[in-house]
Image (tube, rainbow, N blue to C red; front, side, top):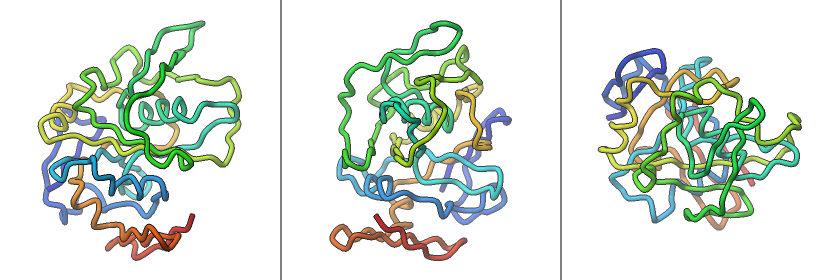
Length: 221
């Protein structure tokens, strides 16, 4: 089963994995860092991964990813992306400043994966205030004044047990930072099912991404 919540609907749906009435399976977009993170041994087998739904093809991406703006701290970029894409507030202190939301980021204590690839994992059950609050809905999160992007990407696998996942999906409204990626909702998919989409070969400098809807895709470092 997967759990689906569209941002403009009042409740979530629980549907069989093969039911394509609402979403069209997993997107072919997958970065090497999130592929690596899916196999981290610290993610329990009974947990679910939160994934953004894209309007263009009604597909959903495994994990949250994005690009770092020039001069931007990679983790702050990820705080911004997670808030924009799925309405999850990664551990940080957020305050109002000069009409914008300024993120003051203390040293992150959660396990970091593959630091050279800028990838993290985050169990939302370990952080009780991890949902974007109403007052930040549709706000611009400005962590750096320069809007240009560089080629560096960041990613995070946001996961949790079914109790915390359904609590997240059952909010009166899932609030997000202002997003320009045409994301219309979220899917929660079991980590076991998510891993079935990736054949990860750690020693061969590549992964094979298996997708029944789009077909196989090879992603290289």
